Length: 392
Image (cartoon, rainbow, N blue to C red):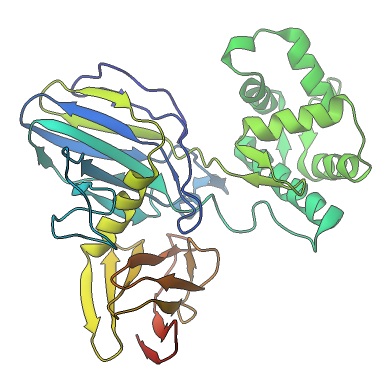
């Protein structure tokens, strides 16, 4: 999440979260966590707004928005533990948090909760996105330099499209100026020396007054292939980092910050909103408790439960709980879905679950929210020591 927070926030004002940490391993999530201090009973509505607007032929394309969700959790009281593998006898998650309300992951411009009544106490508000961005934005190649060059091509193309307001394949002076504003930041907007160095490094020529997309991408890729050091490489790095990219260990550029946007919290009494910092257990509970509240089915003959939480027309989350006495390997295959994509990156995943343990296996959203899509899943379970079962 990108933005700034407002401490001492009052009813009707907008609070924006700073970029938070992802939860490694099972959930490739991006999130920020906020603490809401409620002095007395209040009504509350929380919304997450996508800010990264895409243009195609002059119109907004909602299918290009990152999928987002938001959960409101009641902070655990002293001595109040959570469930061992999932939802415990206390009605709380593994981190001890209680799900109060929210909206599951959807691929839409805005995700908003219903009106929720909160009692006096401390709550966590956890907005999150289940995907770094769209598949293929920063990919390509068969490893080594080809993969690095492919990531530069994709990243430069995606960044160019953000600022190509007329979708003409060229940036004029005003559009290029907005790109430079993004790179230098608010504190250095008037630093003409800095702006000039970046402009030169990115290949802007004052006499021409235009930057062509195809020519620019080829120039940046060629510079990377030749491992040319200097102002150009520095400008390219600053450009991509300012637009939310990071370089991985292999030298490839990956978009890890989708500019998911603003978090708006509205209450009927004055409350206080503060940044809560990294909290992986709250993030896990925020995701898992939504799914565990979905439609439940017990495949008793196979020893597992499935949970299906449908999030409107543009999202569904699928979870599995191991009901066997010992560890088991669970495989969920969503390959029969059409026009869908998973937060896992692929449509098939396998997890080892302890006895009683629950995990979210897939969160599916449409590849494009303005096109038809269907979802389907099959589950197979195998004891860690042998024995099989399955269902769908």
